[in-house]
Length: 204
Image (cartoon, rainbow, N blue to C red):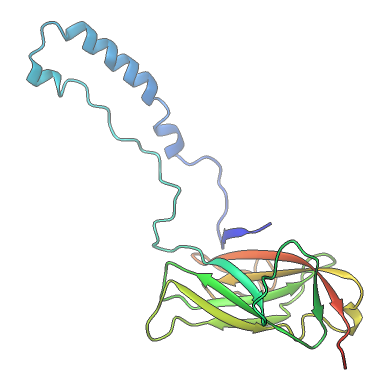
């Protein structure tokens, strides 16, 4: 339901490198047998280099930081209370803000935040709220952005349970593409958090 995603990328099945390192155990056994056969008459200096396995060709799936996805670390209301998942959590019509804490190893990136309510339950719908966090004069790994909740819930949403999703992108999302209203072209990356929320009438 949540976690970093990559934009504009398709899964083309097994990577070529997945087959290149698969015979290493067999080659090691063969090499070991060869060493046993020649160890009795091979000079030590040659023995040290007699059987060298090539390095693994498996790719490191970890992020090298060249283009890392943003990470949404924390979401709180204006009073500092955690906006805990999965909810449900009340949202009052016409009130409130959320304080988001996000990190991005690409410290020069501008982070784009989008709120969606019931996206795709009937049909893809545009973002209810948009805001962003620029890197600033002295970019840091972690940054905070305060985004309004006004407009997430309207009078017609009151009383029912809904799904609120918050996306954080490291490129500005587009309205068209495979994911309408929330697509990001490669090499853009994003992460998503979601909650169950209930829309409530305001006090006034």
